[in-house]
Image (tube, rainbow, N blue to C red; front, side, top):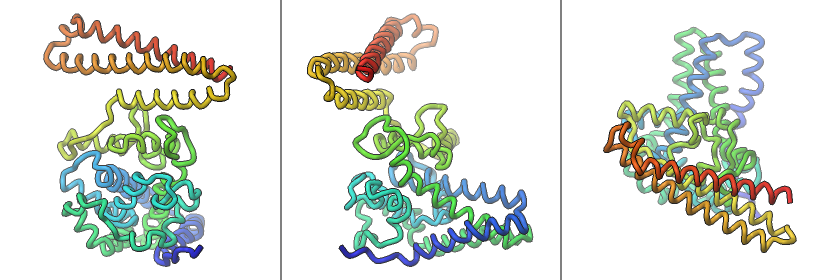
Length: 374
């Protein structure tokens, strides 16, 4: 089978910047040294690029998980060009194809089933997409966004100006041009690239499948620290319309915090989230599927499976009743004072259903542990 042609531009960029970051940057650090100003500027620029990809390219434009003020969009568009990961339109088109055809080696641009190297960087080194490379039919909505169209049209000059102009400007101010070009320019770019690429590669092979095993995406808290919260990837692929990746308050997801904080200032709005009920149902359904698979190896699996299905149906029923009561309670609280709702029948019913749900969860988990030791 004939291999796709090499993308010499991409190969040259990755090879040259990679070698500079691996060889020249350490050499300069040991022989001359970087100042605190350069280190801080590199970290800030790295964060600007990373957040522009996660909050902008990914959650704002690719998935439309929220909407933003034109000023926010403009800043994120500039940061995206600085990150040098192609235009918003092109990046979003690739990413939407990835979600639509995830793990399909023929349709997913960076399918994890083609191996770590391909999903991490190999898919960009050859022109695998051919004529589809500039087909943006899956992004007709984005082609109506003036900032997206503007950034796409002027992407190359914007990328050159930001990647050379920003480090050069800081270098001229501090009289340390070479140091700034190496650190803020090249090292920042290489780290920004590979931190983002980890989501396409490592996040599909390392971690837990919390919500489903229908795709290779995994949740990994360690990766979240390198990717501004994108490490909770199994959740993201299951609920791609949610502006959060880390749904618990303790989950490290600075992109979520950034989007939420801007909403308090009126700069972001229409923040979309998956309901707690749907999330819990997905987790329970996944556990049930794993237990079914485990049961097939048990000599008395028919009897056990019947018992398991009964417990599962009770759990789902109680879960549905609990979340219905919770919605009613929330609505009731909007209309009454706090002192009122805690003595109401709705609140007492809510507490009773919560207790029953927790009891059924414990029975279900106990049954799961029994199966695992059987």
